[in-house]
Length: 477
Ligand code: GLC
Image (cartoon, rainbow, N blue to C red):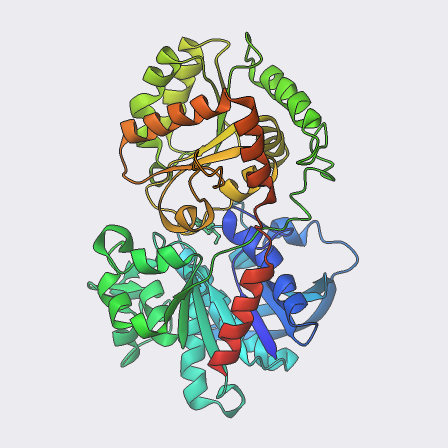
């Protein structure tokens, strides 16, 4: 079976969030699950950050021209191989030699170009996949163009399309007036992409795909409701038959406290001494002082409102005043929250550490040195941090939504089962009460140690989910 993954980011080449983790690990995991009976290739834009740091494994494959509306555009194709997976890169300096991955005024045009270029790549390298597996709105134009080709072009007629929604909040919405000029679409195509009077690329990809998946089962149900769908519930309900959910895994080799070169002291579930040392280091880094046994609660997150920061803002002062808990946060984002955390660190010196930066290496030290990890998201398609924290023995406290619901089962003090703590409603005091309950369990050394073991032993590898993807691909053919 031949699969072509389309995405706008993948580790280790380019990353702005969870999508890159998934695209960097899923293709290899699926290949492994197939016992090598699968040819997995990935196509990405050649951002300048990749182009100007590529090593000798990169090879120039060739060039072709891409036509989009009235434009005829250059497309260079590069490739390299990693863990048995071929990565192609679409090179066009006009579109991708930018300081930003996204957020440019012409993102619509950039990813329309990318979509067309993917079709050119398929014919140019002669790799006709059985399945195209496209991801998020940046790959949506590719899906819309490809669907046309499966009607018109003998070579591509049998290609099946799976589209994965990693986050429905980002849809690629543009004014209808640029449909022809920028996207090269018109006539009957307007119906495909039009939604509420605008071009909506995500909607176009949903109706053009054979199957749609989300990154957890729970989220695939949630997005059928108005609360979670960001306006697309009608379309998704109409496409319900082709909608499914498969929870993400993480790269458990990369996130491994026993081998990780990025953490100071290595450890495993049978010997947690290294974790204690890491807690000392982390306290030092964050300027936390006083009783070393005080529980350390952390957050590692983009400071965006859907990550649940309204709840944190509402009760963190109360929590820090009423308990001896210590708190540290790592992340950047919306100004409102950055300012809030600056005040917290000023008002609670020695109790709260605030690092307003995006720093992957430091995030490991956070995961490895803390006691509890807070992730109270308003919505969370899957979430990877709760799984990463768990690998490093930091007990997650989450809101029961999306992938957080599917990956974290609440601790039961009577049976000792569960791998974290959770609360149901998007309510600040409900969150605070569950944090206080976690602190109560933390005080009971024996129980807490057993809970850490449960947490660290939970299987978050790709193995089970890769098999589910394989079955899904099979069912589509
Ligand atoms: C997006 C989602 C996140 C998910 C990730 C990978 O970033 O917001 O929940 O884990 O994609 O699928």
